[in-house]
Length: 353
Ligand SMILES: NC(=O)c1ccc[n+]([C@@H]2O[C@H](COP(=O)([O-])OP(=O)(O)OC[C@H]3O[C@@H](n4cnc5c(N)ncnc54)[C@H](O)[C@@H]3O)[C@@H](O)[C@H]2O)c1
Image (tube, rainbow, N blue to C red; front, side, top):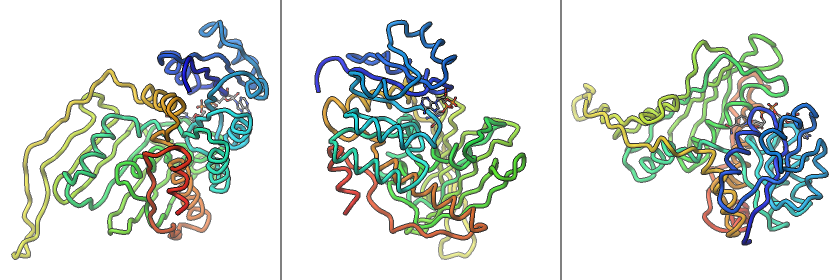
């Protein structure tokens, strides 16, 4: 597809305007349509995007001449809106998580394949340069064998009414783990509590196991006094801490470890701490929007394609099942290949095998 790409956005709440700013800054792309069911929000659009068409009805956007639709609405609405957008012949990017269930995610992936349209999910952290470096270190063997990963995403709020903290915050951590490790876990187990509202968990601990013996622990919370955005990876060669609140010093690599030799006493290794350069001017959300536009133009799968979104939803759904069953360990299908550099349609085929 060549020439100017026309984008439409559905959802003008907290996150929609941030996506709009990034789409508007892309070359050969314009934001021509903005939709939100809330009339008051639509009025705010006119100030920043006076030339964009606006509507409170998604159907108007689907019937318009936009090539690409970005869905930035609450999770429960993702499936119906994305489905309708694909059926209307649009390429679609859906905010995270892709859908509220595995069946819905499967359906969207198959529909996008049949319609030969790009389906993408807003896994913003997969476009973070620090996460990218961590992935290269792991896949290049520079961390040694990965023993375990701990992720923490904590703060006071933002409380949601429609989903719990697992579906709200853990999509980020699960997508980071899938991306960095390159494999899916084999089982999931959850303990969680709704301290404020018993029916909606606001603090959750998710334990993941992998086929090679590695483990991961995700802690997500809306009930914490400080903002924590941290991933700690322990390899038998090196250790790494990725702290997303630290910008240029977001990634630190520790030449630290412990060895058990012939002697039963554990020997500790202490070495240098390295801080790889991370360009502070790169905005992950901008790279994400660029990837979407590029995938549409070239007919290739974006990094965070529909299959990648489905993989995260499978793990979130298993976490929910564990929570509902009182914290039992839920087995996932054997680890599958979750990436493809091929076309959007081939990416789906790769997963189906
Ligand atoms: N990638 C990230 O880092 C990130 C960050 C924040 C939010 N998000 C995601 O973005 C999405 C939206 O989150 P938010 O915080 O902006 O929510 P929000 O509640 O602030 O905004 C949602 C907007 O969607 C509108 N809306 C709801 N249903 C609609 C419908 N059927 N048709 C048209 N408009 C509709 C609402 O009126 C509201 O203005 C969620 O999926 C969330 O997970 C992603």
